[in-house]
Length: 102
Image (cartoon, rainbow, N blue to C red; front, side, top):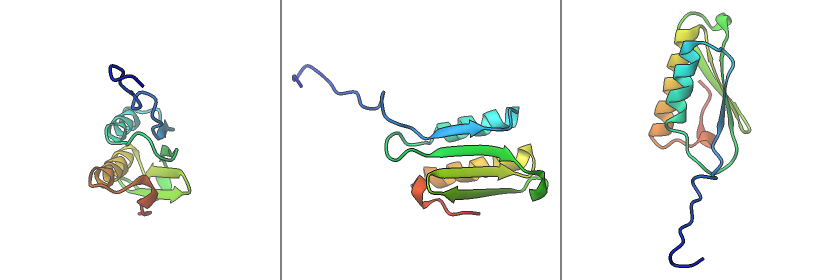
């Protein structure tokens, strides 16, 4: 590489992918909040956002298996709460590999 050239790895860095299974405004909001803090590079992860009414209104859970993380809300509001909880973990330095189930 010549001195006048710069390496641009961030453009091509792999980011975790997020799958919003809800197709709701709340799911889109949760997706945006997570995208803002997801690190580029490192192992490939898939984060899935979904609603499971069995959890109850405003409830959420976060589960992780290998390279898959699932954020489920009991309703759309619970999904947002779960996504924001995951976002807060990532903002404070927790890696995706260290995410603990809730």
